[in-house]
Image (cartoon, rainbow, N blue to C red; front, side, top):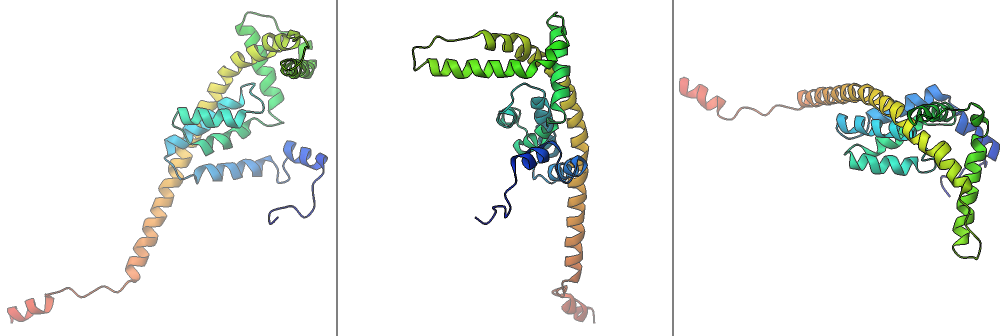
Length: 223
């Protein structure tokens, strides 16, 4: 294959690059900014896509963030590619903080107390929920009984408070992204149009100007 790596990366290298890109997060963010400003769409549509991508990053829809962002961007008439790029706000470095803030805020919104010890067992709750889901899917085709305890604990202890609590910082973060992206994209597109007009003007100045038809006849009539 043309685009196949010459040296296959190990699982550890792939995981390391996911957590910390080889070029660094600042370089990665700069690349994302350049890609967003160069998208061929109206600035408000691109900014709307940025809002969607950031908002979706604050939801517990792990594994389907890209799909959710694309669908929501379509519904809101935003730029789909911009929404996909903006989901990178949620990454292995930010997800722990996003999850902690969202779950704590969600419990407060539900009038529940949050036990900090739950954070240590958060992965276990996810694991139990997925184990129940797998078992219940298999139980459809077998004589096994369905188990809902793990999924119930996950829904009421994590998913529901995470969803409710993530809406507030998700909307605030999305609005911040919208109002940052809108002037950046607008300024870039304006500069690009100005440079294009200047290039066209220079090309037009280099072209030979045709003589004005009828100018010599008009001078002869005067004579």
